[in-house]
Image (cartoon, each protein chain N blue to C red):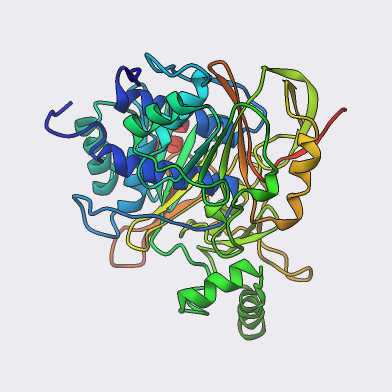
Length: 189
Length: 276
């Protein structure tokens, strides 16, 4: 049987979007999302909530969380499954694919660049990576436990193609932090 | 809240589409993202773009302020506030500090904004190059290449002909050193307030179907030349009501014999100063 989604789809989607807008606007800031009433095993609550809030039949989606997740996403959002290259939303709960394989948009339509939802073990502010860029006054610190090996370097390799690029939302439990394509990361202060 | 409407008037699919556009607009500061603007129950030019952005952002615990040329008490501002009170049941306010979302036509409030406030601009013409390159396909290419020489030449010609840059409002800006952006027709006086502002600035153009954004703490530079630096312009008077010599002033004609008064365009700021 397919698990339920949001208890109140309209208001929960709004709260979820607003939290993500805050996270994207202030990169490195950790925000909590309202959790769906139910979700398939293998999806962290924050990732499930973001998919419910943002995806529909207009958002081709790639995910690696398995058949239960695929059925749940299809039932609640109607988002069509797509290849990694064609997906607007990419959900990664296991091995991180090469970031270069994701759609980065074009110079004329950089908004077509994918949004990557990436599961990590834990997030905390005030230590770890040093973030700079739009949305950050001076610098922000974000500690990410369980980030894939080579993640920071792989992401930095995409910086020269700006305005093309991909935007990343790190998901740990029901909490997220965002790394839009404009954010520069130094691994230590 | 009036029943019979979805929360905040727009249907959920439309709000999702606009929300996705807003998130990409934040990720690429100053870039215009096309969106499927809907017909709204008011005519183009009255803030259809701003209303769609506000409707997609607002939640039941928000407090909404709407200003038109700085004023809370004009027809347009009152109508939009009443619209959201009816279709979203939200509280409204005239106070800049109490508001969580401020929808604005052609001004930035005098009271400094803070983190987590959202400023929604109503934009008539999002394309800053429109008068120089009317073909959308061409202007899109110019943005892709960051080729903004046309605008520099236009400002140069202003200086050559008139001795100064002739744009007292809608003066073009460069966002985060990359995109040329229309600040919407705010007075040039307000341009410096966009720079490194702690609030989230969102722009909606309904007729032109474009959304763009300036994230908080983002560099916004008004286009100028080293030997002709950008100057914000303000009428050299004090407000007749609150005596402010720092706020942006409206000129009022008071009779047919040349009488005039200058008063603050920001009614909330002026009223606060008169109270204290």
